[in-house]
Image (cartoon, rainbow, N blue to C red; front, side, top):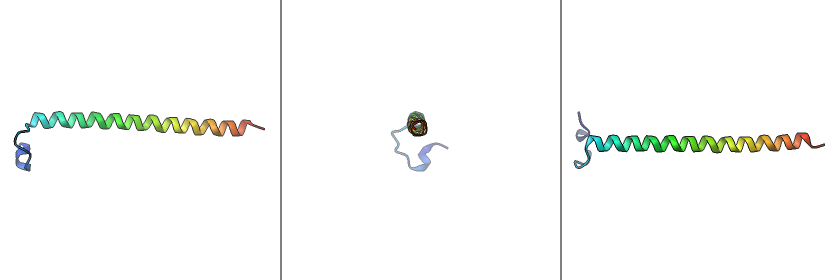
Length: 57
């Protein structure tokens, strides 16, 4: 069954939809990786602050 049955615009082929899906999947993976990197930077900054506070007399 093609996507035509779901009311998809007729000028898009199944290959077009597959390419869009791959592009969306790649963008999502990139955003997840960016979010993980940002989370790690925040975690490291917090650890640095805790280390600074505990090492100071």
